[in-house]
Image (cartoon, rainbow, N blue to C red; front, top):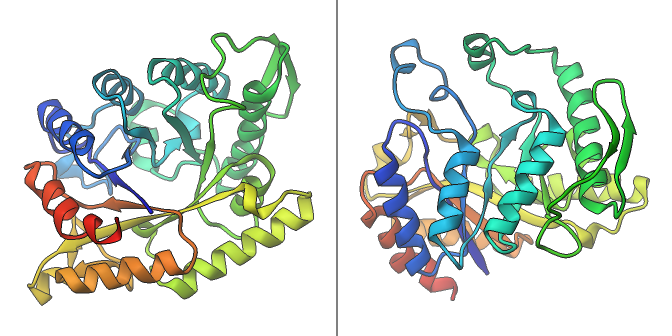
Length: 309
């Protein structure tokens, strides 16, 4: 069983982020993941002056200071960067990390940061349309052996090569962020390689919910002629180790926890994670551990992860 950590990149310092990465590299963890925001979510005006480190820059620095951990984003916002640029950056980062990068990308949701930085924030439908097209473009660049021509409604390529190519074979895995049943999971079935159930999104983090979403994904795979087993199943689970019932039922990192999230005493957290593993998850990414001390990650490693090894 594999475990990753979503390491916060806002409301903190680079030294805190790098110290946590070094602790993960030295521990039992398998992967490290970063969010992609330009203002600290969920978007409180009084917090906009606080740090929000740029996601690709952080991942590149971490790639250079680690040799074992896989790394990626949960998840990049498609509206922030041209998808051809994303493919180029991803391939470069995959070379830097010697094949340890997973490209995690979603349609984007944070309206306020678009306004702050002057980016268009289209309707949900258009963002989904753009996202589906972007995923198709990125997969074309990742998989083609020759320069790519692409003519979509929003994006175009004219005999565009991807060089350097990805270090991994056959290509960098694409993690499609989001679990919308009509559009997002279909986009995943068509163009993605990794499913991720996001515990921050507010859904009930239960085995039943996980199975429901993966059943929907399997149906889309059948529709588009994809083998469901080709898609890796993962979960981002906000977690808090605490014997304080009030703390377990309230907030992590300023955000209210969804139903069934793994917040509580050690044995409860172990049981909750075990249920999701039994339901078919192949990797659990732990979210919500504060970067103010590496001991938060070391404690989780020693008290929880070692139980599953």
